Length: 294
Length: 270
Ligand SMILES: Nc1ncnc2c1ncn2[C@@H]1O[C@H](COP(=O)(O)OP(=O)(O)OP(=O)(O)O)[C@@H](O)[C@H]1O
Ligand SMILES: [Mg+2]
Image 1 (tube, each protein chain N blue to C red):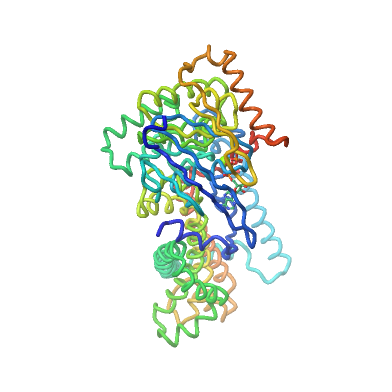
Image 2: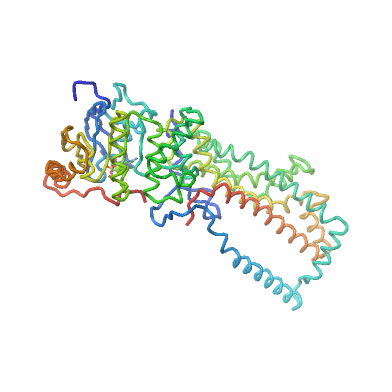
């Protein structure tokens, strides 16, 4: 029984979890002989970083201006100063910090658990055809159910404390990450596995030194998608009788037509999600520096 | 040469691939014996099964019929005594040149110190010392090929299976690496199976040139090269070389009156 046999089953299937990110999608080590430069590697992009950053800032400023204009034109929107002052009070009395902490904890725990389970399951599915056949229908099935729809079940089965909230976030993160990991394993270039084999590598070495690194880009993309799903599920999860949390605060504000608070919640979620995504992006850049990007 | 038992023995090997409902015969009853310390080159049109033959000897494919023996034992999988250089280089893109070269030394348990030294030596041999810590993506095609060569040499295999290893190299580097290959071949008494699409190269390096034909892949002609010839520039320019070259050229390009296309640049990895 060789690695090839185990993997051969995984070739035909089309990509189920096509991820929104593009560049980490093809690890196939397609190396073009053209355009290879003989100078020192890495560092190429840093010089051009200033302009996009400036454009980003301009874009944000324009967006806020537009928002302000719409708010003053009579649309049902709070103005930026209203939102800022509300943010001030919410920060001042500690509500925002408590809410953010509660939400962040849920997202982080759910996301961490989801990823921690998804990566080994994805590896096992990619490596052993039998496990794949057993697990895949369930994953495909649960993928089609929005997390929101799981909530009634989760509440009945798990009560109304933290468990069901974390569970739905876990599920969202898990599903996004597991498919990506599995794809990564299935897509490992067979020539590289052959190269390792002729260099004396056994199955364990091939797994640790070829399959894992080769699927890392896929896993990281899966983690980023999973993180997005985790945040997306948060507000829904906090529908479940929460006492605090950004999603809870917004739903509470909704009862009183308290638009500024809703905006503070939205912006906080956006900023926290963005920061976490940047951290993952940084990790991705670091860990997949070897990839040829086009 | 046939008095000693063959180092490599290919006996009536047939390999078919099934493509959907059809089957495709990549190798049809191929037999070939390679003696210990022999240098055999293989030329033939693209798709005639050269790489398939090499993969069978490497233990990466199994013959559909017939058998392949190495040192008298049937090949049942890859082994570190058979070094392989793939047509597609197959460097690990996440490892640096040095780490790539050290890969086989790590799997075979060579202690770190010696690993370092040996990797250093072979990286120098292929002229990549300035790029030892570079990732493959920053290397040119020829440099990647040289890295793959160093990686295979480092394990010190008694058999070298090389699939168009010098295909992406410029003429100068190619001649240099040909000389180095001949040197390690004679010094370390290796047995070499060398696939190429370059008739000159095939004749220059070989004790024996095996010409293959396609559809189905088979041995079409075998041309012996007198081992008395010294592999130097004088040989390259000699009338004997020209005669051998003509003979092989004819076998490759005018197989049974039909003009066959040689596997040329289009067969290099894309
Ligand atoms: N895994 C495979 N499945 C189906 N067909 C295959 C497979 N591997 C090789 N073949 C077919 O077998 C034939 C021989 O392939 P092979 O790679 O050995 O040719 P080659 O002589 O090395 O050609 P080139 O000079 O272009 O490298 C080709 O027609 C190819 O399409
Ligand atoms: Mg080939």
